[in-house]
Length: 158
Image (cartoon, rainbow, N blue to C red; front, side, top):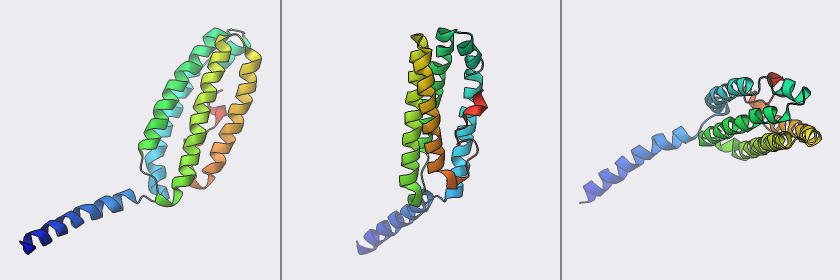
C-alpha cells in the first residue's frame, strides 16, 4: 500500500514539473510567441483601414466609420489571443498594464468609428489624438521587449 502511494505521488510530481517549467517563459520566448499574432493583426488592419483616411478627408465619414468598426473586431480578437499566451512571471504586471492599454486602444477605435458614423469629424479627431497618446503609453510600457509588430505604429495604416 505504501509503495502504491509513493509511486502515485512520484508520478504526479513528475507530471507537474514539466507544466511548471512550461509556464516559466522567458521574455524572448514570450516575444517570439506574440509577434506573429501582432503581425497578423497589423496586416489585417492595414487592409481594413486602407482608404479610411482619404474618405475622412473627402467628408465621406459614414463610409470611413465602417473601416473602424471592422478594425475593432480584428483588434479585440487579437487582444484575446494575446491574453491566452502565458506570460513570464517577472513581467506579468507590466504585460497586464500593456494589455489594458490595448483594450483602451480598442475602445478609442470604436469611439472614433461612432463619431464618424454620426458625422462628427471634430470629435473623431479629438479621439484620434487620445488614441495616439494611448499608443505611446502602451509602447513605453513594453519598450524593453523590443517588439516590432506588437509596437503600435499608427503610420503603418496611413
